[in-house]
Image (cartoon, rainbow, N blue to C red; front, side):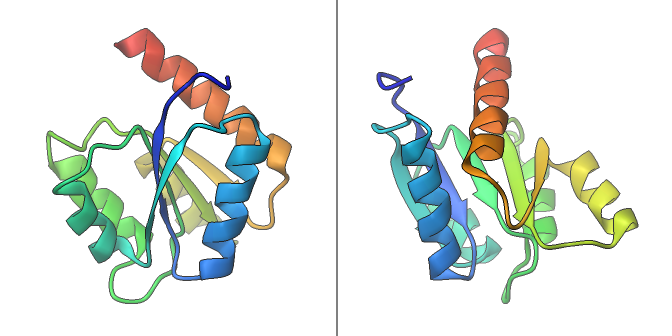
Length: 132
């Protein structure tokens, strides 16, 4: 996977978590991935006006605009509706987790193992390659 050039948008209000996600992605063999960071959903939507990304990894509970509202906006816009999204959250309310799972492409509970994130990435990228 070293030769795969991806652009990944990491959306989380915690800079430490953004670092952990990016480090995990690099550890999983995506050394060439370009990372873009956003502190919240509103900032992410603004970034997507000028950048094309292959994947979004986003928290759900954030100030200004949370992940659910951000995903709703992404799904309503044709330019962003097909971007794979991995939601990463501490959310434990099962009905909310079910809603998030329906809306996004994949869901991971925090804390997570590097292997779990790697497996989700590989699965999503395989699906995306098939759809191209």
